[in-house]
Amino acid sequence: RVRWYNDRIYVVNRFGADNIEVLDGASYALIRQFSVGPGANPYDIAFASPTRAYVTRYETPDLWVVNPATGAHTGTVSLAALADADGIPEMDHLEMVGPLLFVSLQRVNRNAGFQPTDSSLVAVVDTRTDRVAATYSIRPFGDRAPGVAPTALALAPGGGELYVACG
Image (cartoon, rainbow, N blue to C red; front, side, top):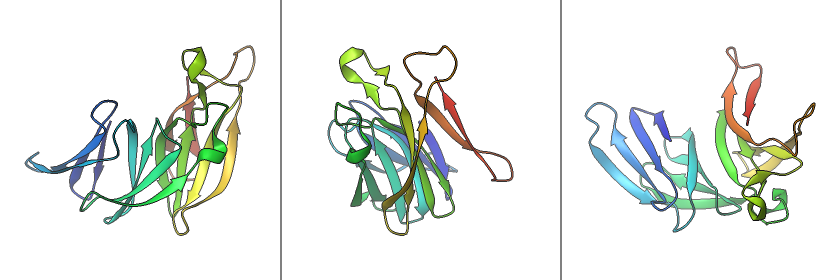
């Protein structure tokens, strides 16, 4: 996954690499590379400021807070309470809306080939306190079974709604 912020390109290197590369937006030169923990399998990065960003880690229940200017791990937001039976919420996409960070939680059943469980979630983290402020359940509709997993988040034009794509 690739993200753009503050004239920098952030390349999220996922399972097996477990790091983020920071590239200069004009020359594409590597500025830095930093780890997000061995075996963490990062999926996304979102920015609250030039010195504060959040990284989803698919293999753990911990959302990391990092300083994207240095690569330092500066904090953790536990999402363990939002996990399904396997203890991992499978956090995926991020979307910043003002001081609120929306985090898609797929909550898949690892013991059944990563099939969706009966419900997935979108957690809202208040970045001023690094606490979960709200959760929204995503449940299947119609004849879709057993569930749905959020695969993308996008802020609607004008900012009034958050779209959640599911697959």
